[in-house]
Image (spheres, rainbow over the protein chains, first blue to last red):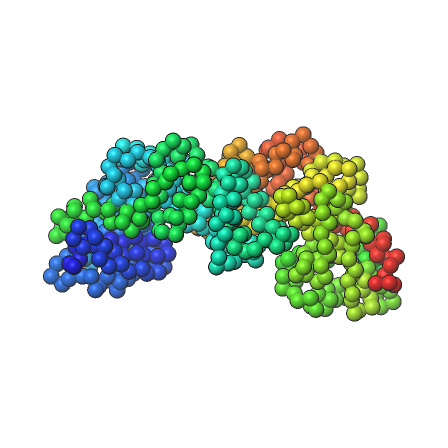
Length: 304
Length: 304
């Protein structure tokens, strides 16, 4: 199938590249660890070419649309934030990148910022735009789990407010680098322990840093197995997160956008707290979210 | 001055050794990084000898009393926990260690555990015993800041309950290994920012992992300087800790036992939350807390 355009989810540590064919179907996908943080400005184009060269044609310009930290100040080209309340993606705010290779046209979708309280996103706005492209009348809340989980309130097509939690990053730091590393390493997972910890943290989110420490004495005093404590560590962090945004999600529709594993975990957690969340695939979200941008891009490639 | 006995605060990563003279005065002090976690059981005695040899006499047995993680299962010899409610240090529960060197008599003070919710301490019980040795009628709360900060409720000479927070460890992980490392490195400190963050977290401790993340966008959006964000990081963690133990300290006397820097920081924080804490020196606390144990020890060294 002919490749119409290329979508990039270019984050701090990883790059997901999607070859998009007719009807905005994903026809090929490449994962790379060449994240933004490892690249100097001059290295982005050669890195990208090395990854997507097989998808390019010599007789035409292939539009490439990127979102994520690639548009940060330390990235390829800065794409200045849109500020809430705003559309998740405004085609006129997308930034064109000068490239040397004539087969490429590259554009970067800007992130979204919030002034009070201070918060930022890069990449999630595109996923939200993707869901809204398919569900234009949706009013509700998005939950985007990950290294920095985000909860985003959307009304009338606009992002109104959002909150970012360090949940994923904290889980990694605590499980691998803290005193809890001795008791949370396991290939297994105890689902009941996860649910119990969700309830513990959701019903009383105060003192979360004490509840986290308590996992260690649970191992020492009770011999609680690692798969239980690993699941509890995750459940405590996610439960505290869900509790803190209750005002945002109560009596509203909730959509989870994430990779399969994270989305499923959050679905279980959210259901335990009384929500009926719907899951939307994160890759599909990126492609759909870039559709409006690509249309403009293809019209203007000669001028880029 | 003649050295009467030796006190050891032997933790996971460090060892503080105190030479104690007449009247329980500290006459010399050695700090070492030979913590429990780096030593196999057979390595404790030679490590100790290498450090305190200058303090030993050939014509007598020098009593050595140790507290801390040296008494853990992975330590030199396990000193099984006392369980709350209990005296912080019960001389009859102190464990004698078999040593080869005839100049040494070594005893380890056991830690204290709590079954519900699960918690453990090793070392802090000795410091609390030290304060109580000098203030036997004290009823109130101890705050022991550190890697794992502890709040301990004491009544009629007994530890009734306690809670451990990962405050110090989390600060280190976040400041050095998380996304916040880009915006919290500074040799300076903004006292007003610290107090502001204490108030923010104390008045609303929910969503602490979102408030922590927010430091990064504060740098990105507002250009907030690193010394402000470093102080806010500390203030958020400590403020959430203080809020979580309100039921323990409200209307009670509070004593802080810690090193000078931590004790001063917590004093400022606790005062901002309405307490009038008294500071008690941590080294003095160790020596005073071991007094009752040493007396027994010196009587029984021949039998050890």
